[in-house]
Length: 209
Image 1: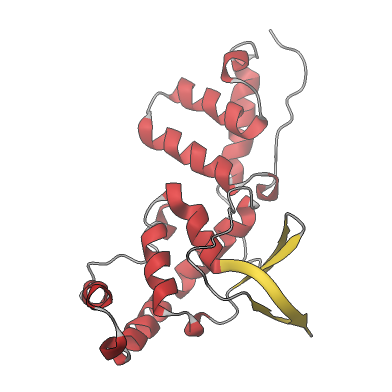
Image 2: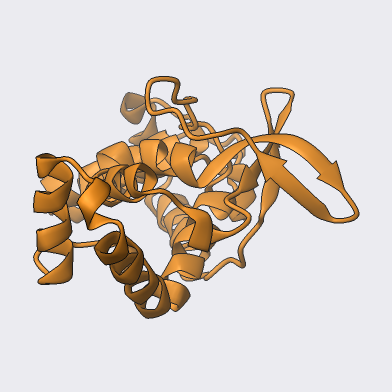
């Protein structure tokens, strides 16, 4: 049996969104508890799954318990973070979110596999920052930044923040979309209809974390 110490993360900021996406896919596709424990160690501790079997069973259970404990946290919103040498900021004013941003965000947040795309809408490179305030780059769906390696606490903090604002945000967006429906394409009007009648889910995964 292995005797060396595993490098075990104990804070969400030590994990990445991409790791959590892989973990979530395992949870959705397999119900075998032993397999899930092995994959948990592989994904979050960087140990090849074939090697996990050489560690003490009691140690594996302890490590998995530590990791699972982290997922019970509800992190606060972190509005700015550094990533690949640049600073990214959360949309300063959700009221200013465009129709295109909303529709793309709604689509991408419908699946954990595309959650990194949703985060690239919510967080964009900071252009200017002064006296605690900042502006971010305009939204461009053709130039999405890959945020799979962003800190997990930042991603989950944004999701929990949206969960708390969900009803208020939905009401605002419905009003905005209704007032601007005459300037929308047929496809946009169809999406609007689904949103207004409740069949288009927005942030549907937030409550399932």
